[in-house]
Amino acid sequence: MLAKKGGQSPILFCGNGGGKGLSAPACEAALGDMDFGGKLVDRKIIHIDMDAFYASVEERDNPTLKGKPVIVGGQPEKRGVVATANYVARKFGVHSAMPTVTALRHCPQAILITPRMDVYRSVSEEIMGILRRYAQAVEPLSLDEAYLDVSGSSLCSGSATQIARAIKADIAKTTRLTASAGVSYNKFLAKTASGMNKPDGLTVIPPTEGASFVQQLPIGKFYGIGKATEAKMRQLGVITGADLLKFSARELTFYFGSIGSWYAMLARGEDPREVVISRERKSQGCEMTFAQDVTDRDFMLKVLYEQVHATILKLEKKQLCAKSMTIKIKYDNFKQITRTKSFSEPLNLTAALEQVEILFDKADNHGKAVRLLGVTLSHIQKQSDAKQPELWRED
Ligand code: DCP
Ligand code: MG
Image (cartoon, rainbow, N blue to C red):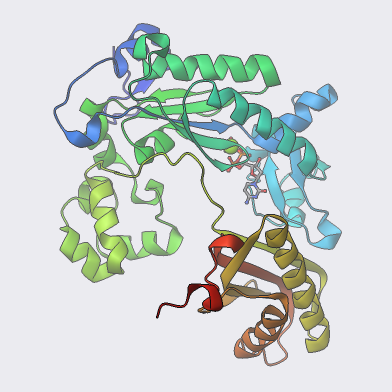
């Protein structure tokens, strides 16, 4: 049985909570052993995403918070931002990355909690451990989300939907937290599905429904389409996936560059990306929002030096090194710029300190007041893989 939602294409809503349509037999049958003949629809991918993760951990550990608006984030007087808010606080318009001061204006009665990263990290390890019991291919994306490829699994008679349900139950039992799951035949659709019925949702987009689902999807909900691209799409008259489908890959490449061919695939409900078992970190960095805006160049350089130092140390601890550096500067008007430079050899500390100054001066701040500074090192590789000219010279 297919549940229709708001006149959209039929998708299976198998939520355990929130009073959303529950259709267990349909869920079980959803991805069964259906054969749709196409090479891109024969995989079974699950995306798991914890609900209001940090805030849920806080509520779990302090039952007096139950039913109250909870914000996990930095202090307003230090110009902290919201890491997350529970669903009660979200009703007031509070969301991740919002300055805490704004969040508290929206919801003055909210209880503000400073993040306890160690606790979230250890809960995350517990969750990833559970996921690895259900699939060999588990790809964590952050502390609270991961993809699983369960194609060919013998668990739950091979039903990806049943596996997702079992995972949710296991997570709930072990951690007393809820997760939402999305089940489909590729990453893009599985991830979109997991966000559709939060919290405690289980949403399945079977192969028969992928194309029609994508057609009704608002363009802003497409994976990787941010606010700026969405605005550009709108200028082209693209409001939904159906509109996007009218453009060829070549046309989309003309308008958006090489990423255009990716949009063309998404419009067709296709996403060939594999679930990658061990995902290597692509970048490492840190940033800092100042309690008060700063204009002093020496002070800012000192902060950047410390950030570079800390970042290089973190990489070295893992025997990694990096070949690109990016600095981020956010001004008092919230305008943000980045400057990046790549190098042929991995950066050591001395080179990195020199380069951060060059990048900072390239930004040409002209005494503007700065609210945030950050450094990211990317193009990361293992130190042992870094080319050592004297050892690797090719004669
Ligand atoms: N996070 C953060 N800063 C952000 C976004 C997220 O620190 N800008 C942290 C806090 C979140 C966690 O990462 O709890 C997971 O991020 P999600 O985007 O999955 O958000 P939540 O799990 O909080 O809520 P949802 O139920 O929407 O998944
Ligand atoms: Mg989450």
